[in-house]
Image 1 (tube, one colour):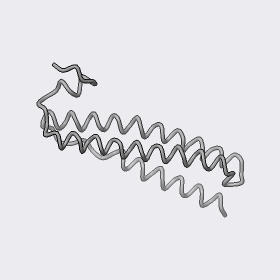
Image 2 (tube, rainbow, N blue to C red):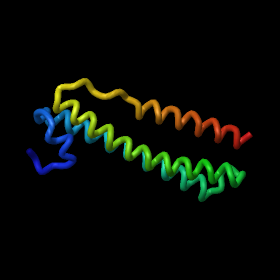
Image 3 (cartoon, one colour):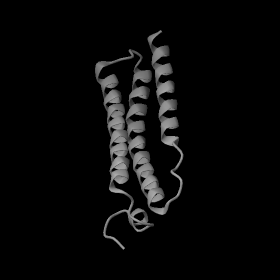
Length: 117
């Protein structure tokens, strides 16, 4: 038993090679940087008034900010699932966060393209 949290991750299986755990942490931090960029993008759209249509600008800005928060939460869940899988010798989880990110970027880009027409 350990005093590290979350216990459901750290109490499972054996301690993996530290290099793998540290790589998993770096990946988590990369997702957090991506989430911060989404939040900053939403704030920037709202602050500079692009696109000119108020409802579309507000919708895009709020969507980006909320998606940034969601990305952070999902990144933490992914970090925990990967760490637990490494500790228990299970296959790594699917890369669903990447697919979600691709979908969000494509939809956001399409909405901005329509707004600029």
